[in-house]
Length: 408
Image (cartoon, rainbow, N blue to C red; front, side):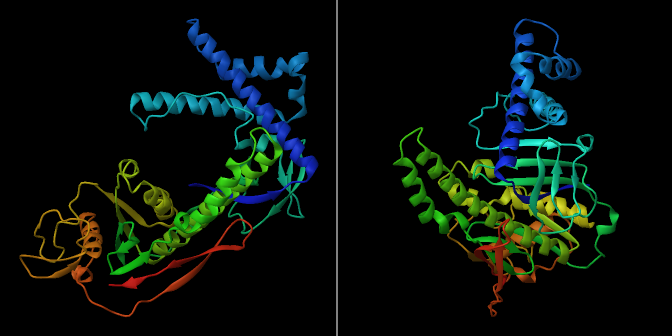
């Protein structure tokens, strides 16, 4: 499978200017191609092919005075911009055909977009120098903060400038079967929630770090400072970057928490089952901020691809499975219960059940995993706490997320 590794870049002032030029040229070619296709559609003409657009908008355009500056950047960057437009159209049409979730039609890119990116393939002859720098054509040798070793030779590299003004190099690498982990015995069901981020079928509970909630005071202060600045001023640009960096710290901490927890669960268990949650529906309720703060979809996606990478089994069960209504001991369906009911007694077998652990056990059972239901009973034991230092791309701790694996 293909994986993407991102590393922080520290370009010099001249390199930032060269990257800005590359971002701008790629954006212009993308917009020119989109305009050509939209014009052909409105006039009832055939859909222009990528080869024709490349010849007209890149090769021939470089010979004109109005587009001569396209020759100042690598031609591969411009070609990849056309391929990005092809991908955008393909995703749009696949959504109309029902092959994937619906998404909007391709739109024009703006120089005011806070995120910019260009991609270099092997044809661009980019390389990693012996000194550990990233050498890009017509840009130079960029300083990279390497936090790990790439598992194989990357096929492409994408240079990204995010909303916070940070630069990243994103490498696409191919992984082989040598990363498959040896088989193990445990199989796990996971019930995701807000009170606890995850409740496991073996009785452990992972506390929710609530990164956004903990950073709200700092975010509000930065946002108020931004609202007081004059539109179009340099101070407003600086304030906007401060807000973006505050949000980036929250997102980085959340992502690190997801990576650490998902890797641990995949390594410790042969099979993992989760419930297919309706995140979009929950995000339209009064719990929207907490739902987005938890980031369930990103966490489940990490579980899925890491299970594939390490040779584990990943299972999703239907969202309408009555995991909170069925007794995991005897299987009797006791009906829906209000959210404030966290512990309930089965009317058939008399078992006293923790609502969340019982749901996690039922998730595992619905997925066909071999788990015991004894974990669903309420048995008090001493809590076991594991502290994890969450780190950003600087490799500096930005938040102390506690993965509190607590026995019920």
